Length: 132
Image (cartoon, rainbow, N blue to C red; front, side, top):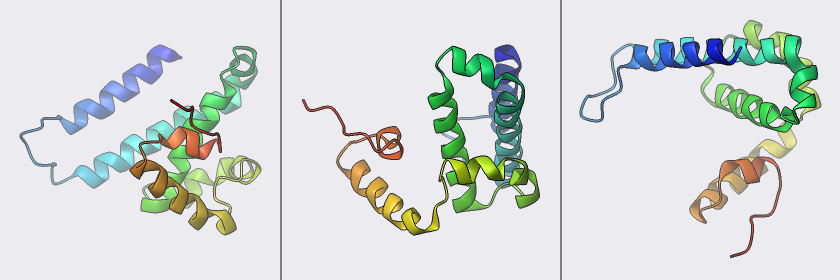
């Protein structure tokens, strides 16, 4: 499974032909849509077929975090068709990813946290950054 995920990630990055000196390709949006859709399908597969093993390895919080970021990114830029994400709508609701009352508060916290050098994972998990 990990090898398959690596293949899809490499495939997606190879489609973009990253180079800092070049401009984004004209078909960047369609490539981003494909990559996000593939990533969504991989995450859905992990939840559907491998969740028990993920919990046994104590990796479910990480999977939830990846899924949350994916859904928030999609909510902001509408890159995946709603019919594609419908299959995990119950999970989106259960994890309260797109809670409309808290969305603006989360976005405000996110932007203020980033200006203070706090990473997004801490903000999404509502944890306090370690003191230095």
